[in-house]
Amino acid sequence: MLEVAGREQLTIGERLNQQRRMFLVLGGVVLGLTAAGAAADLYTIKRGNAVSNSTLGVALLEKDFASLERDIYRAATIPTKQSIAEVNSNAGDFADAVAAMRGNVAARDQNVLDRIDTSTDAYVALSLKMADPAQRTPEGLAEMSRLGGEIDDAIESLRNPFVEAMAANESTQFWTKMGMALAMIAALAALSWRLMALLKRTRTAIADDLASASNALKDIAEGRLDITIGGAGRSDEIGDLARAAVELRNVSRAKRDADRGMTEMVDTVGFGLRRMAEGELDVRIDTLPEGYETLRHDFNAAAEQLRDAISGVLQSADSIHTGAGEISQASDDLSRRTEQQAASLEETAAAMDQITSAVRETAKGAAHANRTVAEAHDDAEQGGRIVREAVVAMGEIERSAQEIAQIIGVIDGIAFQTNLLALNAGVEAARAGDAGKGFAVVANEVRALAQRSADAAKDIKGLIGASSKQVESGVQLVGQTGEALDRIVAKVAEIATLATQISASAEAQAASMQQVNTAVADMDKMTQQNAAMVEESTAAARSLASEADQLAALVQRFKVGAVAVATRPKPKAKRRGVPMMQGNLAIAAAHDDDWTEF
Image (cartoon, rainbow, N blue to C red; front, side):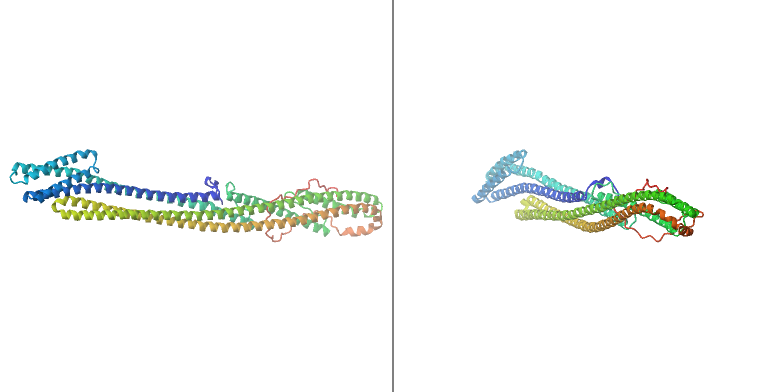
């Protein structure tokens, strides 16, 4: 049975459009989340690179100061013009490095660089003075050591904020990546569940209900009319088909009931007429189907009057010679009754014409059902085309995911270059010896950051791969939907074939009813001729007197004893009738017929 619910107010085309929009939303969400994750990760990497560059600048500053201290100690040990020139050269390089750092530090750290400049100038001047053994004093060496320690502490204070920023950036990158992964998983799960529910609801609303309607039409075509057909309240194409099936069932039931009543009436009346033809005038009909009560009354009245007439003939055979005039009057009465029979046949002909019109309407209804099935077939084919367009859209989403994977490859290359830069910095730190230990620590941090960037790019690439698999799964689901729609198209074509057969059968029945109508018209014409002949028989009534004796001998074979009841003979096995499509199959009863005077 077809079910009617609020969701079934959509047409088949609207349901398929819902599926296409859901696929586009799924692809858009996957693409948007992937792009957002890639952009956030790229921003974090760029920010980490900026912090790494600043940290590298501090490390280079420490390296330059370590080189300056080395040259100062060398000049203090070997005070030559070359060593003093190297001290001045390294002091200039250190001053340039400090000036370069001013663009990489915040405004609050500018005073630190100012202190480094001031302390460096004092440190270099005092160191050159202490390089002269004559001017070297313990207080001067202590002051030089203090100034060197102050410069180291200032450089260390510059490095600590960058190290903390690197740690914070690493934490931000980790939580950003985790958040995007969880958001993508949740979005894919929710949209996939919604998509599966939509596909299931569409299959139930179209395939199952259409199969139910098809089975109902098959049952009606095979004559099983005691079925329940639901779905007539739907507003889509399946609802139209269900309403057509309900109308077809009701018309078929009416025709079946009318055929049964007519068959029973013909059998009962025919049996009574056969007994009357055999001479049993005491036959009577007790019951006939509804609508034929007048015919039963007229038949019984005719049989009663015929029995009385024959009885009168038997009793009055000797007086026929003198009652020729009465017979002439009786012939006049018979003429009038014959005219009444002609009028009854006219009404019968009109009823048969109505039946023929009803059968024609049935044929038109079957043709309309055929057109409705054809429209449903076209809608199902349009649904197949929409599903194929959805497959193309999913392919475009898959290509976009591949382009994002290429972007992740570029990010991976940036991480690799950062790793090489950190490796070179480590080599320089190794060359600097003890003075480059701080720089080596920074180089190791940069390498670790580059490695984590590469790992993050690898994780994102894995997410892109998973997204591509989900998109591929969506393509398979769309393909399965297309196959289901192809099966629906085949079922609709089968229903169209059945509707065409029903229409052809109705047209054939209309042609048969037209032949019956023609036959009734011929009977009416013959009845009119019989009326004319009865009028002629009135003139010949006078010649009956000479044949009265022969008439008395003839009527002796009729039985006019106790009244018998005409019962319907045991019916033969009925053939299953072909149900008609529509029309008023009930033959109007001739209420004005009156055979009481027969």
